[in-house]
Amino acid sequence: MATFIKTPRLIINPSPRLPCSTSSSSLSSYSTKNFMYRVPSWLLVFLLFSVSLLTFFLQWHGGDIDPINQWSLQPVVSTLGCATKVLGGNSSVSSDFRSWKFYNESNVTPKICITSTTSAGLEEVLPWILFHKVVGVTNFFLFVEGKAASPNVSKVLESIPGVKVIPRTRELEDQQAKSRIWNETWLSDAFHKPCNSALFVKQNLNMEMAIAMARDSSMDWILHVDTDELLHPAGTPDYSVRDILAKVPSDVDAVVFTNYESAVERDDIKEPFSEVTLFKKNYEHLPNDSNFELYKIATRGNPNYFLTYGNGKSAARIKDHLRPNGAHRWYNYVNEPKEIKVDEAAILHYTYARFSDLTSRRDRCNCQPTKQDVKRCFWLDFDRSAFIIASTETPERMLQWYGDHVVWNNKNMNLKLLKYGILTRIYTPMVIIQKLKEQGIFASIIASVEVASA
Image (cartoon, rainbow, N blue to C red; front, top):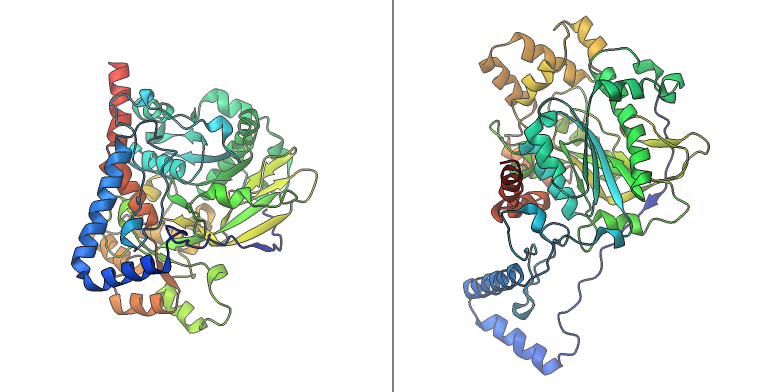
């Protein structure tokens, strides 16, 4: 099973905010302040928005700006003459995605890849990929089944530079049947068991293959991130996971990102990445003197502090003898790896964020909805309860249970937990994905594939 290592921390401090012009005289500074005080606040907001919009428009038509990899999230400076873009634009949104000019990824340092095992549809996987492109990931090794393996979805995903789609074929299973993992004891407790255990073994076999693919693609770092998770590189000036990993000392083999869990506030969420902004922080990011009574309140009657996992995920440096160590960690067949943790960045886990997740999880497991059988199929108490409810109750009763155990609809309690830092608001992923959608990127990718196959 997983090996746990006591790890030191790596603190990535954001760059200080510098004034827009270091050559301004004190008189100029004084005049600007007087101007700011005299102008009504609504007019300043309007002017700031106008300048930002003009800046964005000029960049949109300015030429040679990468529509995906060159985007960065930057703070909006409050001084009038320093308005900056929230998200950069592309040179031209072409109906042919392949004609866009992409950033020369051969010069990117470090090169970061993500591997994932997914059966999700295009509406989930496409935003997931493009968001991670924005935050600095260059390559993706996607092991697909179900909806993700359908010809139309696979064509769209493969049209994105850096994305490799690996369907679960008989040839792949035969190849993985020869893996040395089957002779190792660290995963043996999960062999030949249903549901959670079967997925866990499959993920590790896929991660093992992804390591070889990453090495062949000259990657520097690899992460395993599910398609209901987003990297959140907080604490970096450019909101980039590349900034974090570039600063990791050369003797460090792995970097642990703690995870936050989504706290949905409605029962009708359709697109979690675009609609969810409230998250429960991990213990790792809470002060040591936090009131433990608040932790109990934050469980809301559920078995544990988090509905699902709470041990984060790690990025591993591509090295000889690297191997997976479960879906959340990496290890080495020869040497014990050195791990560190980051203090601000996190993995955002959008777990059970849609009501339909109850039935979709149920449909993936052929188990009996009894307390005894669910122990064989699921590792976590909440998953067991959710499976039984989804298998035995009416849709109305399921919705009521979902509201009682998943939805955070008590505003007073939410405000209290926000005040004490157990809950937090995170808007950045939502803004990025909304901008991608508004600028027609998703539609352009899909349309380009339809045109090419016509």
